[in-house]
Image (cartoon, rainbow, N blue to C red; front, side):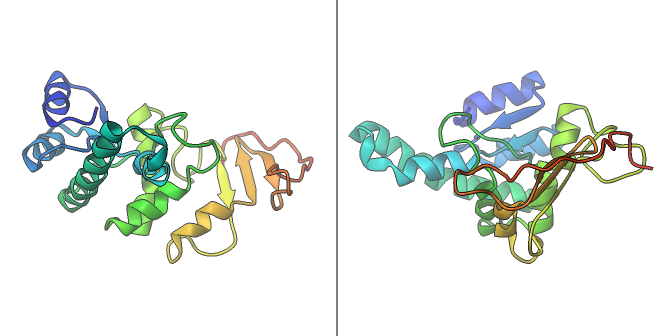
Length: 196
């Protein structure tokens, strides 16, 4: 939800997370902090809409501008307050495969690069209740790993250039994307056992 009152009622009812939260006031964020409610800001969704603003009717343009301005202030406040931030999309608002652009938006609005990375790893795993299996690289957890050129803690846009993906110990992608936007295929041994 975007509105403050709806978010407040949902938080009071005990939801695990609020998606968007654009118009949440500091008092509502304080309530989130006390209850341990996660915020999934979906910053890329509003960014995409703003980039296509001329395609929308005037009433929606005004709403999009207001929501984007409000969400920036709300997100900065949430980061300062130490609210748990999770990483998510608003499915179908923008083309699949551009999710990593969310990281730069988070960092541009005051979140540290390491905390932005945690939003998509350990925080998401905690929110989904699967932190005992995924979310961090630890002995006994599934081997879900990505690699990219560069250091995302010093250049968060490195996350937009992933060239290696391992899911549950199986290599899914190794190498750069082809001109068609797909990865070069590779075969790999099955190493799906948990990390030792």
